[in-house]
Image (cartoon, rainbow, N blue to C red; front, side, top):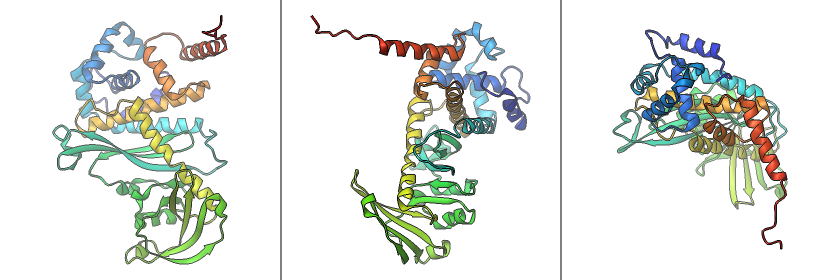
Amino acid sequence: MEFVPKYAFQLCVDRYQGNRYVKGFSCWEQFLCLAFAQLTDRTSLRDIETCLRAQQAKLYHMGFRGRVSRSTLADANEVRDWRIFRDFAQVLIGRAREFYREAAWGLDWSETVYAFDSTTVDLCLSLFPWAQFRRRKSAVKLHTLLDVRGNIPTNVYVTGGQVHDVNLLDQLLLEVGAFYLMDRGYVDFARLHIFTQACAFFITRAKKNLQFYLRTSRPVDRSTGVRCDQTILLTGIRTAQYYPDALRRIVYFDAEKESRLTFLTNNFSLLPLTIAELYRLRWQVELFFRWIKQHLYIQAFYGTSANAVKTQVWVALSVYLLVAIVKKQFGLDQSLYQILQILSVTIFEKTPISREFFNVADGTENMNLAKQMNLFEF
C-alpha cells in the first residue's frame, strides 16, 4: 500500500465528499478492505470480515483505525460514490502508462494503439434487476479501452447488459493520431466518421453485406497473404450519408487458420500487411479479459446495487495497476500472475516487498542450477 499515492486518493475522496458524516470507517479503509479481498481472493463480505479480524493486531499499521464490520463495509459499498475509485484508478493508469511507455510489444511503432472491446459477467435477474438484458437474465458489461503497449486499461465503462457495445463509442475521448482496433460489433459508420473528423484512425472488420463502389485498386504482394488493397466509397442508402469519405478495404488470407479477413480503415499510408498485423493486436484485450476474470474477483460481487458493482470493478482494476507498477518499478522477472500469488500468501509479512520477490527469484534460480540426479542411473 506504500505505492498508493494517498494524497491523490484523498483528492478523489474530497471531490465527491466521500468521508462526509463518516465517523468510524473511511473511504481509505473501504479501499483497503476491497484491495485485500482482491489480493487474497475473498468470496464474500463475511469472508473479508473474518480474515481481517483474525489479523487484528496487524491492521492498525496498514491504515485501519477500527474493527472491520461486514455491515459497515456493505453500507459503504452501497452509498459511497463509485466515482471516487474510478478517478483514483485513472491516477494509477497515468503512472502505469509512464512505466510501460517504452515496453516492447512486437512492433516498431511510435503511435499509440488501443484495442476496444467488452466482456460480459452473467448475473442473477432477481438480485440485479437494473442490469437486465434478456427476459430471465441479467449481466454486467465491462467496456474496456486497452493500451496494447503494456496491456494497461486506459478506461473502463461499466454498464448493464442491455447497453449495446457500439453505444460506448460515444464515450471515447479520441486521441489525434492514435489507432483504435475494434471488431465488427462496432461498425457504425456515423460513429466511425467521427474518428476521421477527429484525425484518429480505426481498423475494424467489414460485414459481409457491405455495399460499396470500387474507386481504385493498388497492386499487392500475394505471397504476404494480402489479396487486395482497395479504395472504396459506400453506396448504401444510409451508409453513404453517414460516411461520405473514402475508405480503405484490405482483404487478407490467414494461412494458419485458413480464414479470409476483410479490414476497413481510414488510414491510407500504412502498408496493407501492417494493417493486418496491427489488427492482430486486438487479441490483447481478449487476453486481458481472460486474465482479470481468472485472477481477480469480478465474477461475483459483494453488493447488488450498481454503485457496489462499479466500486468493486474499479478497485479490482486499481489492484491490477498497482501490481503492474510494482513489477516495473522493481524490474521483477515474475509474471503478474506469479506476483499476485506471492502477495496472496505474504500479505501480512513485514519483509520489504522487494526482498520477498528477489528471494523467490533467487530460490528459483538455485533450483534450476541444481544438478538433477538420474533416477535410473546405477
